[in-house]
Length: 364
Figure (cartoon, rainbow, N blue to C red):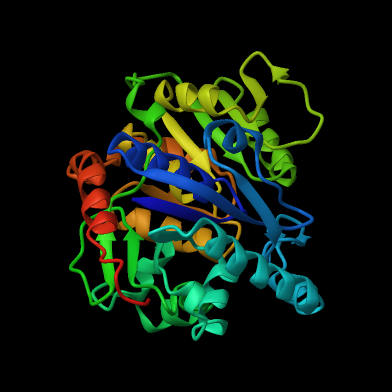
């Protein structure tokens, strides 16, 4: 079968999911004919994805809801205003998506939470050229499953996620909700395991004597430094995205900052005693797979949901700042879901079944 991917370019998670799925599909003799990536002024397609996907990449402008930061957190209001001021740009993107699907004629379009793709399927729903099944994949779709229970307060908090999830998937033939654990399916919504990258399975975790960490932005450095000054005996190995930083920035003998490198990041995580993070879904899954206690400091509402959901599987604790002392206290009480590894290992069979079992002789 021929597959075409569309990927939301915000963060690294959707890119790693696309890489993992492309590997699975090719292993079973299928083809990824092209990858469409929604980008913005503040987010570009990362080099690691361009080097590994082995398919033509077509970029276009797409809405971005974490473009503007107020101190450490993104300003959703400013991001919405910015997106609303660019209707002509996004109109062009809608036509790019439609025309690329028509050009490559895949059997299935796999949408990794890309809004323009979901909108194109809705706006051009009477266009026969878009009569190709779309399957949507993301962790956020768990919230659309009525079997996933949340409180009234959480329903208000997660309203934006649900809204975006519906926009991206309204005309999807199937919705694959990445989940920390198996849940009952509901209609089009099928619960599936996380799509961890192949490199995760090639590293054997060990019990280390340092805290591994990731900072989404440099605003957290002062916070971590302040804690470390009071606890200089604790070894910290943190990764960050600071532009033009040296490969390794040594604060002192027990505190080193590294520029983000996928291979080094995984090896550091696998050898650590615990992990502190701003709660990206993929890295939390990786830490849970390696059985590393996690401190999660969400930066925006999607990460708040990641942290909440991970907590239900015993992955770790949530905080508002990098208070690493609370992470150290949590380590003796760490009790993660014992079924998580088996759930992850079932991903290949489940995804092949769900993606290749879609009939392609009917209009989406």
